[in-house]
Length: 76
Image 1 (tube, rainbow, N blue to C red):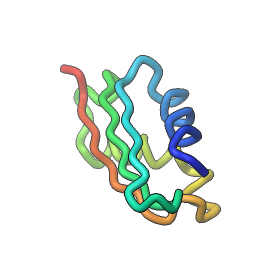
Image 2: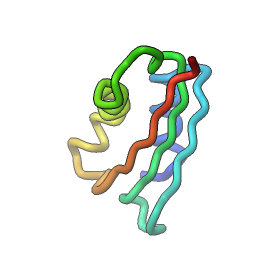
Image 3: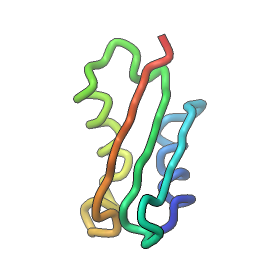
Image 4: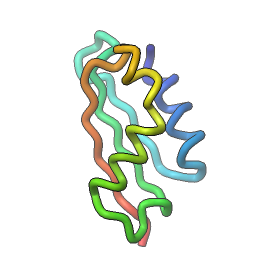
């Protein structure tokens, strides 16, 4: 799975958000994602990360994503 597929999944979950996806090792299974979205306003960091994990549930469950680092921020 490439960074573009992860970006597409995050774009669907956070329309209008600012999304960056980095393949940390070049192997296509270790990623760092950064998501800035108004959906995160007034949510705790844990709640924000749960939303990102939910958006990427399928590739996390099937092992396509081996390691995921998440950075999130609201717009408020």
